[in-house]
Image (cartoon, rainbow, N blue to C red; front, side, top):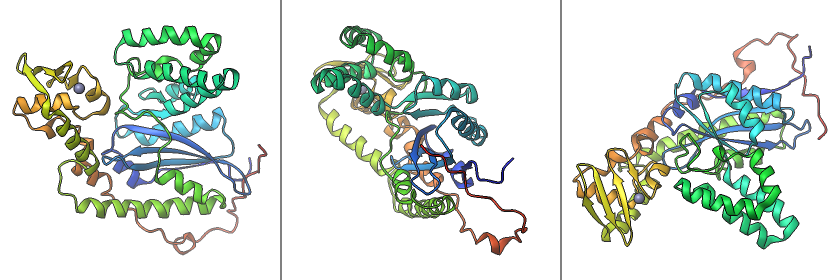
Length: 360
Ligand SMILES: [Zn+2]
């Protein structure tokens, strides 16, 4: 038993409430803290309906090991249980960690970060056979990862195994296809393939990571409170049904589909001619190009079919991308916190010592 700080998990009530209105996706990342006591900051971040980052929870631990990861995911599962949703976790983690997470968090799906896997493969092959061979292997890997059908996956996988040899077989043992390929992954990624998000949380941590732990926690809380207020004000101005970024994407696709032609096969099924032909099933939100299923909003082939059917496009877009959902995700206020000494009398004998510094 020691009175030293060991580890900490933080998930604010406003984030728990707001995350209900975001896609059930969490991106897991870890950053080394350069403070006097070392340590690691693990974060779980979502994405709001306008494709911005939605900081959800974070933990500070003394080292990056299985016990600390299990502890973090266990806390995460506790706060997410009330939501009753199947969550997809995206991380740069390997099979061992993914398996331990699925034991703690059986209702979740675990996806590997494609950027992390690309870098790993490139580093393995370029260091042994040169950069162009590294690029060739990464190219084949991406064709497998994004293959919309089993036949295309198997065709490219055969080449990858031939050209990648024993090194690739080892890679595949650590990173089974179920974690990274579109057709074998069972969860929903909403088109998100990378765990490193550009934006708020990672940059906040970068700014704060040399400070003592209490100041890091305070700093994150202040920045989060300001971020939620800013986004709340921003969305008050929006007049569109969809969040502006998604509305923009949809408008671009509407321009693209002007020359497409949709031919009806049944009440909801169409054959779309766009220089090639695609099958669209409006009832099942399906297009044979697979973009609709991947992204959660209609592709250009689907849009021309919806128009042909005199349907309302917004009825076919996931609610998570709508302005109303975005507003709800930032609706819960984070109240300013007074200095702890002002609120409570702290007994003299309660003293938490700094963490025991661990050398890396
Ligand atoms: Zn399509």
